Length: 222
Image (cartoon, rainbow, N blue to C red; front, side, top):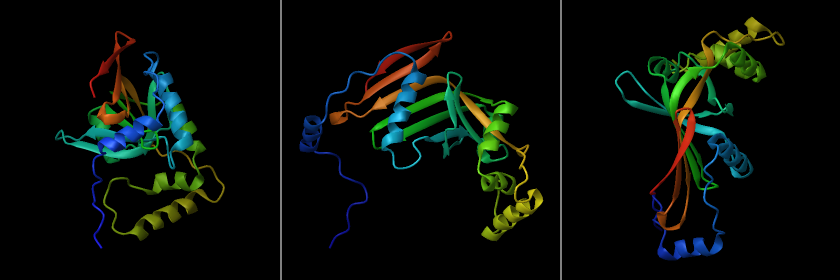
C-alpha cells in the first residue's frame, strides 16, 4: 500500500471539461463599489464556509523589512476600511506602529474565491475599541489582560495562572475594562483585488484602485 501524494496532482483536461460542463458561467464581476461587492461575497461565504468566513491573513513587515503574516478575524467593514483587534504590544501591533501599512487576504475555498486588500493603517477610535471589547465573552476579556501576546511563555501553567489571577482581580460578575494595550486597527484600502476561479487556470481578476478619492477598475490577465 502506497501513501497518497502530499501535493495533489494538477487537474487533467477531463477534470476541467467536467468542471465546465457542471458549472453555470457567471456574469463578469461588476465594476461598481468594491465594499458592496466584498459584502456580497462575505455573505455568500457565510453560507458555505465551514469555519470563520471572516478569517483573513494580515501581512506586515518587521524592522528588517521581513514579511510577517498571520490569520485574524475581520470584525468590521464599511466604506472607511477593514477592522481587526489585537494586543498593541504583539508582533503585528509593534510592526504596524513602526510601518502603518498592511495587506489582507481572504480565501474562501468553498467558493473558489479570494480578495486581496492593500492599504494604510490607522487606529480605531477609543469608543470603537471600548464597544467591541465590551461585546466579547468575559473569559476572552480576561485573556486579553493575561496574555503578553507574542512574548515567550515559560509553560502553559503560566498563562492559566495569569488568567486565574485576572479572574480574581475582576471578580465573577464585575465589569472587565479594556486593557490600555489592546485596541484595533483599520486598514484603509488603496487597492482591492477580487479573484474568482475559472476553468483551465483562466481565472478572473478585477482590481479596484483608489484614485483621487474615487475607485478606478482594471481587469488583469490571470
